[in-house]
Length: 408
Ligand SMILES: Cc1cc2nc3c(=O)[nH]c(=O)nc-3n(C[C@H](O)[C@H](O)[C@H](O)COP(=O)(O)OP(=O)(O)OC[C@H]3O[C@@H](n4cnc5c(N)ncnc54)[C@H](O)[C@@H]3O)c2cc1C
Image (cartoon, rainbow, N blue to C red; front, side, top):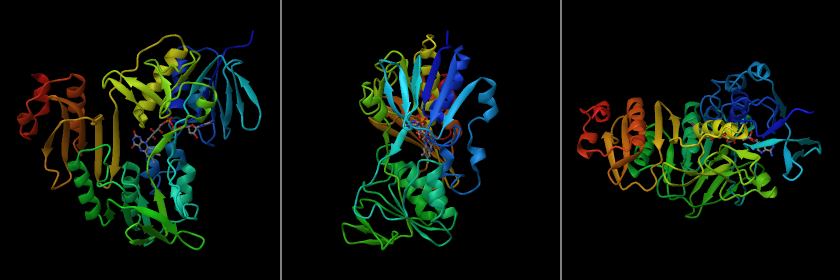
């Protein structure tokens, strides 16, 4: 009898964790992780932070050393793309034609960058940032005094802007919406980040209608609808990501803004699980469907998916959290602020670089943005999960410790 095989497609945060968790949950058969990047699972967040700045190198990014996977018998097939899944015959096929049989399958295919398809977007120097090769590409265009235009004022755009300033470039951030971080934070938090970036010398413009990129062979200018022209040696586009669902969709799995998974990270096929940025799940805490783009979600869902594949189901019910590093500011976010109806600021967002924003809905805290305030993040997480009803005045009083709320 041949041993059972579990194939994991995608070798990143979710894929690597899922493989390790399979062993921890008692999977005795073969585990084969197939990834189209040529690297073992690596940490993606430093790509716009310390890897871009050159402080960290590829070997520093690896989530686990190779020996750790070898020790528990996890096989990798790297630099290979899975091009098809045959659910009926339980096989996956690589772009190069080779097929592999599976007993259980896990999809951790992540997300791909949302392309900006406008005039001149094919010019050299118009770049994106999702993986190691993107950063290596960006490095060819950067240098002290060079002009970088970042399209998109989301976390990745802003982190990249901060790092390029540190490297001595002239940086402009162009955001189409009326404010940066529009979808994810309160106006006060957006105002704070606008102030900080301008203090650091970034030119930051909102409500910008970009018409196209112009240049002979490589990008030289960004042209806007109102006639404004921004000179550019390079452009980095950071306008979000799209879940990578092509493979799942072609295989006939249920897909709706991500591969649909239940509370146990199981797809519409009981022998196929999915985890990470590629999924869409129902979140019990927020009582709605969510597609999250965070390391924490990828790792937590991977553990749940592995348990499901080992027939030891555990329910996924984690509170989302996220972080972003820009200049000397560590932002830690607990929960999701969408639908908040009230906001309490602890500290002063108009001055200095330390405060917290508590988002409330019907008197309960649903999310916290903690800026250089790790204690508020920690207690905020507990306040959210305990669903405490809070007195707003005390919450905003800096003299009152959040620890006391929890004690009460
Ligand atoms: C620059 C940057 C900074 C970030 N910063 C933060 C941060 O500060 N905090 C945070 O929480 N999150 C951050 N994120 C988001 C975080 O990195 C993602 O949420 C996380 O990588 C999701 O992991 P994943 O395994 O689900 O997907 P991914 O990391 O996208 O991995 C999917 C993998 O599958 C591979 N793949 C896809 N299809 C196939 C196929 N058919 N065959 C083989 N392989 C395939 C892909 O090439 C990729 O390697 C950042 C992301 C980026 C790009």
